[in-house]
Length: 338
Ligand code: ACK
View 1: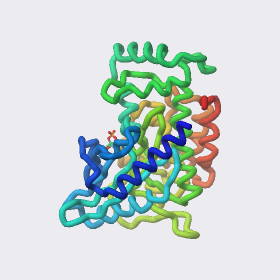
View 2 (view 1 turned 60 degrees about the vertical axis):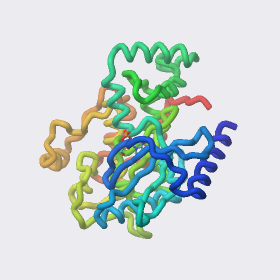
View 3 (view 1 turned 90 degrees about the horizontal axis):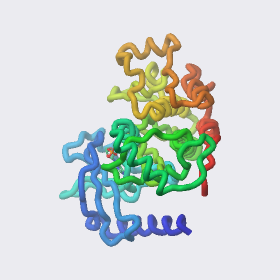
């Protein structure tokens, strides 16, 4: 019933935005700066209360032609995507004489995953105590098999954004985050044959109940028919630290190179948003990887999962585990209640 209400709520929101156009968007505050321009939070006036916020990505007035094209292609790519773990596009308003092009996205209240993880780590002991107390009192229930906080405590992340206290994530919570990313990626790669090319915690968003959604499709490309790789000629800025070894070498991107990035993303999650290969300068990273060196196991990462991560960093792309396999391993011991 809740699901049906949410679904009809989000459909109603889309209808309002599409029918009433830009005029129903009331901008509230800047959420951040993206590659192409700004992301703002806006209220949709006249939408059902449950779903009134949206995120609006706007192109800079003076954006270069290439960025304009990337912006529009991101909007195009997002249109047909429908999955719980992939950001949903609500509408695209083209550029007019008086207003820039803007892409209306669903709003996720906890922002990007890397920020959230770093915040989890940074906050004070007092915050942690307060959080742990509220977690016990608000979410009573059986302890999970690890004897830690109840799994429903995932919902405790519903703290207001600015008072999120320090919290050490439990193993089921780590597993829950990663299985969602892997399922979103399995959908993108298997159903839509999409290569993301920039999968990282900074490009995932977090919503209520620790719901993770893959976002930032600025670099994504559709694989064309029988070609199973995408090659770029141009040298833009590249996310070297999360890139697969063959992408660094040959500038080719495949589902398998996204799988490598998924492994790095998992490492980022287990280290609460640390920088991969922090001690290795960028110009030495290729040599580092070429000599077979890889990221070390973070203390919070279970051995079973680390073995999968090591597989994602196999120098032979076809030997890497599939997103489906990664999701399956992460979901073990994850008895999420309905
Ligand atoms: O951590 P953040 O607040 O979450 O900072 C970044 C910033 O905008 C630049 O990307 C935030 N952001 C982007 N898209 C959304 C969205 N759909 N919902 C909520 N926040 C968003 C992101």
